[in-house]
Image (cartoon, rainbow, N blue to C red; front, top):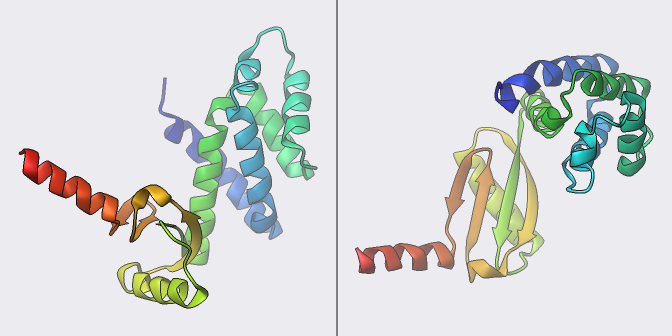
Length: 178
């Protein structure tokens, strides 16, 4: 079986192209991510491949659990994914749709994990410093992670900058046991 990223790419590109043509990428992304979360839920995932359910029942189930009113284009897209047996690729489609949207806007998602809450000034300073490392405008999401003990861990795409106390302690442990 082909990798999910390979299967998802044409779907994501087609959906993004349609969204961009309608100027609806911002509105469609949260709906697509809600659908992706729905098909990934442990209680729902087995039902997406259950042969006893018709395509229409799958569609109704996913739409109801997602709880979002879908525009006609996303309704047609979801039905196409169901008909083609590609619901397992939906989370990857959503991730690639987000990347395509970010690329078109010249932005990047940035996850900042910190042991303690940051003030707005500290967060602004950190994002400004990160802007020197990353050429795109960063859309920061701040998450508290007490297990870091101190410092921050920043994830942008597949790059991780870990300046946490936990990372330093782990590095010292490795050096001492080597």
